[in-house]
Image (cartoon, rainbow, N blue to C red; front, side, top):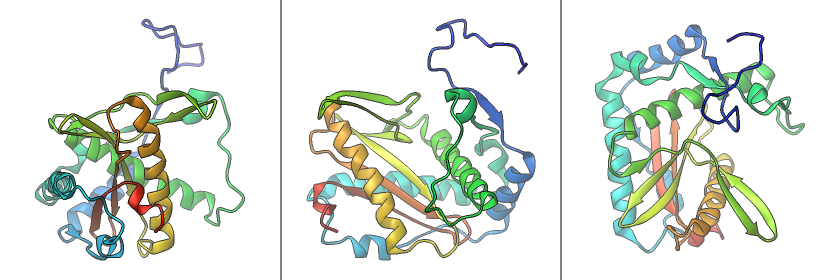
Amino acid sequence: MTDEDMTCEKCEYDSCFVAKHITEKNRRRWMKIEEDGVHWRKEKRITTMLKNHLPDNKELTKAFTKSIRRFFVYMNNHKHGMGKLFPEFTRDYQRTTGERVKRHWNDKRSPAQIKHDSIRGVLYEGAFQRFASDKEEFERVYEPFVIENVNDEIKHFEPDMMFLWKGLKIPVEFKTYARGALVKKKIKKGIKQSRRYGRLSKYLGTNKGAHSCLILCCPEERKYSCVVIDRNVDNF
């Protein structure tokens, strides 16, 4: 990395991402949480809360739940190997887009807390992506999907992964939460984002039911949950 202009040999710097290091201090903090923490366990109250709003396709839900369970079992069995699973780099949005990061005025978190939450998300999403990258039921997403002519607009969306099931490609959103934050208000925000991805992915032609998958976890509380949702959840 230099101060000189960088040019990609393949596309002359067209939509390429610029990376930056995740500091080793931050990585080691979450590595220690994994090493010292109890086993991950599934949080059932979220699926209980949504029990009347889940898809009718129980076979799909069962398949996704089974795959995500394997990820957290893997995490339990590799507590001392997170250095190989946690990414060392993250995307530098400011240098990639040339835009300054804008903070929402209604965000009550301090800049330090926003950075802390962001790094937590990058590390655990990255761990999930590395785990899933060689699994036949998942497909990596390397650049945003561009959907044109949706209400005469161009829309972009970038899920963390695509779940493959019987010819379907369903967007997966991975959300991490701070201690005590797995509450209904915050969960609804994750559901809203996941549903947007589901609705847009319908236009790709591989997800007619507009399904989407959502993974929720709290590393400090060692809890996780996962759901498949569709339009049935819209009145939740």
